[in-house]
Every structure is written in C-alpha cells, then in structure tokens.
Length: 316
Image 1 (cartoon, one colour):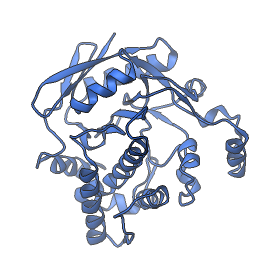
Image 2: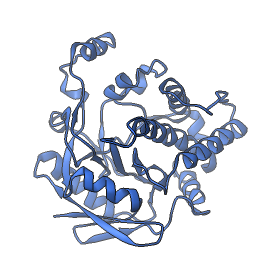
Image 3: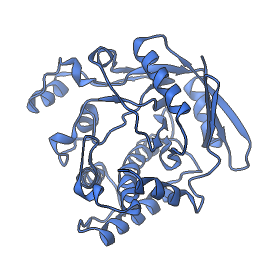
C-alpha cells in the first residue's frame, strides 16, 4: 500500500509525494504502527516547526528558528529555577551541543523525565521541546548553507505531539539497521530524548551526559524521509575506538547503528528537493484508507497555543 504525503505552498496550491513501503519485518511492524497511529490520531498535533530540516524552506526560515529559540530560552529563564546564560546570536557545533545539553537536563529521558518537565506548565514544557527542535534545525540549516544548497542533505520528519502508543524495538529489528543511507530512504523516527551514538560522535559532543546517548528503542509509526545523495556513516577505527572509550562494544547489534529503512520515495532527491523548495508546508498523510489533514501553519497565532495545551496534558 502506498503512503501519500501532501504538501502545499504559500498560495495554497498543493502537490503530493508517494512512499513505497518495503516488505521487510521492520517495515511491516512500522506499517502496523503507522496504521494504528492514524486510526487513533484524535487530537495529536503534527509539529510543523520541526518537519523540514536542511531544506531551503521559505515557510521555515533561519529567522523563524532564532525567534523561536530566543522565546523559548526566555520562558525557561523566567518560569523555572534553571538559567540558560549563553549568547546564541552566533552558532557553531560546540554552541549547539551546549544548547542540546540544556535540553537534556530540562527534559530528561522518555523513561526518566526530569523534575523540571514533570512540574512545569504546558508553556514551559513546550519551550523545553523547542530548545531541542531549534538545535537540530539550526544544525541542518548550517550544514546545507555551507554546501550552498548543492548536493545537500534534506530531511522530512513526520513527528506528532501526543503519542502514547510505543512498541519496544526487538533485537531482530535492531539488526536490520544500516549504515549505508540511500536517496529517498524512509526510516524509523528517533522518538526519544538524547542522541544516537552516531549523532554524539559526529557532533563531537563533549557536553552530553553518557546516559543521554541511547540506541533506538521504540517504534511509534513516525518516520523520517531523507532526500539527498547517498552516504555512509563511518565504521572506521576512529569510530570504533570512540565507542570502546565509552565501554561500548562496536559489534553489539543492540546499538542499532545507522537508520532502519521502511520505505522509499518514488522520486529522486533532485526532484524531491525542487518540490520542497516551493511546497514547503506539509498538510496531509493518507495510508490504508485513512487520511489526516493538518490545515494550520507553524506561523499561525494559535499554533504554539495548540502545542502548549497538548503539553499541559502530557502526564494525564
């Protein structure tokens, strides 16, 4: 069964992209989770501020990211005892690593949320979430900007706020992760806090607490779509030595290194990137007779209020 994603431009014109699911064990488990996610969608919110990363999307500019980051830092500083004092007017990977470390402390893990998160209002919880989103958005923005948007790595994230159904990932699926990433690959979304082993290594993240480096543990039905030239994650002695320095066995399949492919886009990345330059607002998904539409934009005045309301119900 095909998965159809709908995108629209600032004028309301729309286009669609089809995803072709694989027939692997991983994909079948994911398709079942996606079908259940759409069946029980209810008032879950697609997070439009964190959907297109690395793309030159006018709908979500660098200034949007900085404005959201500054607003979120201000909310945290005013309404909690935690203080973020860094100047985020300029960015490099070291600065973004520090920003992500603030988020890790404030959020905690999926299986061990922090006291900051559990006692906070919906407004503060939403601001904490934005710290993470803005961090990864800015990382992707600068990576593509440095490549002058030529052969850049673009991503679409289908990620929802309000998910409660999560399936623990069995070892058999973790063994199906790959370090070779291909154009148009659709893969499982990392629906937890922290960084994967590769993210921490490639970011040269000296700020992150070891407890916040974690393998992919759950399946939710969410997914990411990669559009860009194929690449491979490093598997050389530098990476394996780094793992060993963390007392981690590089050959342990439980690490789930790389991505877990589940589907493929039906257009090459050159075409897909051109489409998403103009049609940069995701608004619908259709699969197995179910269609969900998201007729709001991240710039709508009510959008952040929607997120804050959902975050206020987080522990209910």
